[in-house]
Image (cartoon, rainbow, N blue to C red; front, side, top):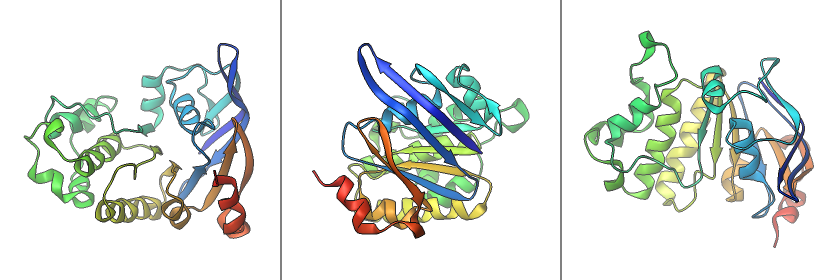
Length: 231
C-alpha cells in the first residue's frame, strides 16, 4: 500500500531523517516507536507532504508521490491525525467533519454514518464548537475528521497523548475495527508502549532519524523493543 525508500530530510545543516525505509500494508497496524526527538512526527509529516524531503521516494500503490503536495496525497487516500489534534476550535463538530470531506468527489461529500458508530459522543455534539469539547472528545473528532476522507492509509500521531484511560480504550477498539476491515493501512506513532504493542502487527524503532529495528511483532522480543525506549 505505502512504501518509503531511503528518505532523508534536513532542517538546514541538521539532518532529521537518515535513509528511512518503511512499508505498510492493508489490514495491518505499523507502529513507529522511539524516544522523543528521534524523527517520528517528522516522518509522518514527510509522508503526508507537510515537510519537504531532501532525498528518497514515497509510493502509494506503486505510484510515486514524493513531489505531490499534501492535498494531492489526500486525494490519493492519505489522511493524518496530527499530534495535538489540531481541530478547528471555532468551527462546530459538524463543520470539522465536513472539512474532512473536502478532497472527495462531490457525490461522496456526505459524513459517513459509521463515524458515529465509532464515536457515539460526536452525534450529540454536532452543533457544538470544537473548542468547547474536552481533550478526549477533540481526539475523537480529529480521528473522525480523518476517517471522513475515506483514507486508504491512516497516519496517527500519538493519539493517546493527554487522553483519559476510557478514551484510550475506545480508540484501541476503533483502530482494531479499522484494521480488521482489511481495506486500510494504519501507521501509528506512539509513546505509550502498551497501547502500541497491543495494536501492532509490525514495529519500527527509530533512533536519531534512523530505523534501527523493523519487524513483525511476532518476530520481536518485547523487552528488546522496550530497551530502545528507555531514557
